[in-house]
Image (tube, rainbow, N blue to C red; front, side, top):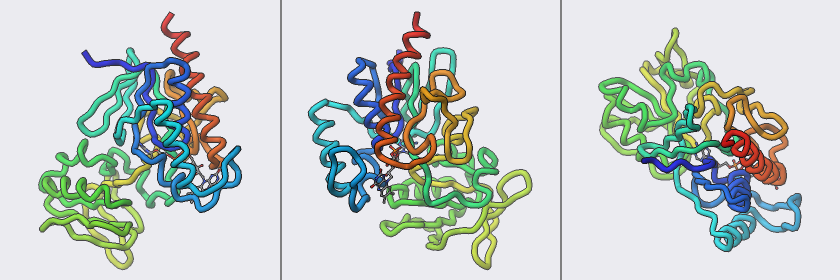
Length: 286
Ligand SMILES: Cc1cc2nc3c(=O)[nH]c(=O)nc-3n(C[C@H](O)[C@H](O)[C@H](O)COP(=O)(O)OP(=O)(O)OC[C@H]3O[C@@H](n4cnc5c(N)ncnc54)[C@H](O)[C@@H]3O)c2cc1C
């Protein structure tokens, strides 16, 4: 039988880390899903002067967090979560082929700061996808586009090319480019996704490419793409003071809940969300 955690924490940044640290202190059975390194935003800060007792760069901050994480034995499971599904027993989270079950969830996935493409949100589930493994096979023999934010997704583009006839790949990064006879790499940012009812084309400067689907391969998914039925206001999840959302058992923390985008706010919310999970479990497990 599948193990059911008390709480699944999604996002490897400061909000997710603080939620995991607090969950451990509260003796919750947690799984923390994300990538190593505490997030690119934290690592890339040049100078931090507004976090208590901290001076230095983002890299110094990440090193201090890593030392504490090792001391406190906080486990991180490397995973990019692509779906959160609610049910009677709690939640099922999917990350490629892997699945995790939990009674409660804390989303701490940050916000997309590079902006979404015109039309991207309008065609969610109607030709726009964020997960190559989940939806790649739907595009067997079709023409698709991939808008890719990092070289770590190059392999996912190559995976898509095993199904699709043609992949127009917009690589918005410096680094390894995907290879394949049916992959055409472009380095400009496309302008819009368009169609009547579902995706039919991707518009670039001076050119329109007919496509059946567009994959956005990036770290930060729009909240509603991750979890259907979640109330959001653009990039931000709507939360109550205890960081609960409109879905019972689902909490959110950090940049994902809105401004100010600050480490101290994200860390504080990670802590509050874990306490709120404990209160939720105590109430619902009687
Ligand atoms: C250059 C720069 C400098 C900054 N300097 C400062 C500063 O000096 N002081 C300050 O207070 N703030 C600063 N900030 C803001 C600060 O970085 C953010 O407020 C903070 O990182 C938010 O933390 P978070 O955990 O909510 O989100 P993030 O740090 O964005 O972390 C979210 C993590 O979740 C991961 N993730 C997303 N989706 C998924 C998924 N589906 N599955 C698994 N993982 C996922 C992301 O890859 C990321 O690792 C700076 C930001 C930038 C960009």
